[in-house]
Amino acid sequence: MSDPGNDGQHEAQDLGATQLGRVSVEREEAILAALGDPSCRAILTLLNDRPRTVQDLLRELSVPQSSVYRKLGELQGAGLVGVQRSVLSTEGRRTDLFRSLLAEGTVHFGGGGVQVLAKFRVLASERMADLWEELRKGGER
Image (cartoon, rainbow, N blue to C red; front, side, top):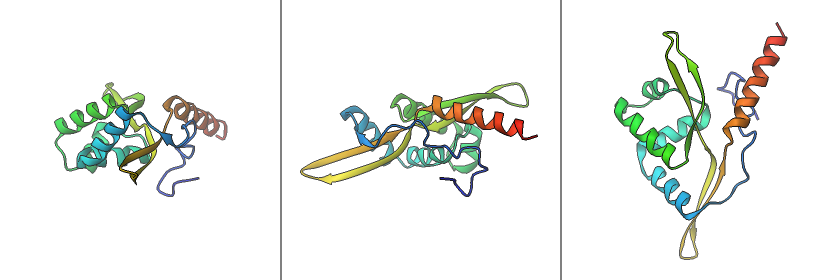
């Protein structure tokens, strides 16, 4: 499925993702905490569309840089965000492209509790899909 706002670079966005399923209690708590925090929720939403740098996030969020780094650290620690790949900036600095590991999620209320079902990305598979796309585009020239 292609995203119309996408340049075709990440069409295989769910490639290598796990199946939607029940998560551990610890991961369930991390997901619920992230969804309850407006800044974390905004970061997860942006990183679910495509990988982004901290600078990309800063341009789209009205949050101080220190808060973005802190929230990314919290989300990484909870296993909800990962570094898809690192690139060199034009100044020669390494820049990380972050991606939401949470591809899809559902929260169910009932039966006296809350149940979280989640589907997680496997970033190595996405990176391989990106490399394949770059090779394919190079062969078309």
